[in-house]
Length: 468
Image (cartoon, rainbow, N blue to C red; front, side, top):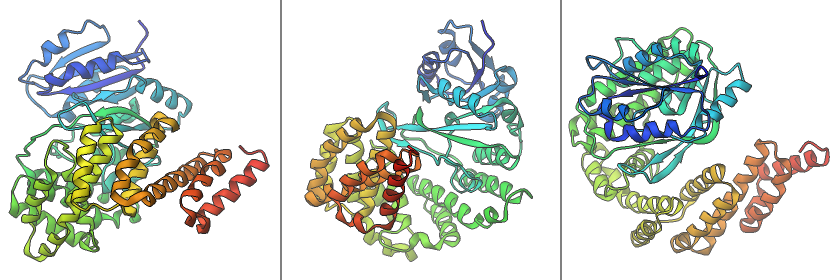
């Protein structure tokens, strides 16, 4: 049997319920030269029995006598592996059949790249239905890694030498924030990152999780950010973002505290967030309310209206004025849930959510149009233009009820013009005029947009000179 090129490392603890599907997704890979190293981190469940069901020589099973945490388990698996490429995979995530083939091909063609990462599908909580696509930036920066770490473990494939350079056994790390230090450290060491457009793994989420040490988790992530900022290799421009970076972390943990009704801690975290980034409470709707809304929609099985009511009730007195934005947030939440459900083949849920959105007075404004446009572009990137157009047609009757026919025309125009810019950035100049024409037909204001006209002119010139 050929030596494996890809070593897949799976730390396992209390995940036997999902591990079988995870292993099957590895076995289904179109690229065959891999090994799967599962590290049982003293799990009290049936992890060993699940692994024993698979008779494949490429699967290795290791066990810790005591629970040591996921980073130590990853290090154990890394040291026992032999592949020149390392793929970390969470025990409950799934990978697309072409994941390894795509990453191997890219890394073979780009020897200067040390870390590749891909977009991913987010599954609905405690379900296998898709909620949305998460697409990290194609060109990642140190600031992105520190401000709001956009990568999950299962997104990444990296060269062995860079995996070994990660400080997985750093005893000063707690249970949160490790990725910020691990990958931020690689970036500071000169490792080059590259994104792959396709969504190649499925991230699973679970309902009803309770976090026992909110304060410890928050401070662990703040520590991880500070570790990067204190590194002498960290550019001053990134170090200057420390206040905003901390605010982003405090905001996340404030929501978690309010969701668990740990009011005093949530108010403390929120106060720190506002201090670091005062702009989050400015405007209508403000960034803070938008953030709470987004978090309340993470789990489609929950009543986001009730959850938001619980959150708003715990806001400190000085932010009580934000209660006026509650009705907007609830209505917008139903509209977003409706769009997601229609996009991902849950038409009955979509119909029900959109009915509630209309009843609550949800509006089809610029921000909602931009969100739906991004959903369509992400869908087209994965499944092609005709598939995305089909979703647009499915959405249109519901969007018309929110904002009339004019709103649908605006969406068609916005979608078309964004596709034109996407084609231009990809060097597909011949496609740009064909996409700008429907954009202008549905939204004549684009005729006055300098950016649109510039892209059209440059693409036309490029086409005439044979560049496309």
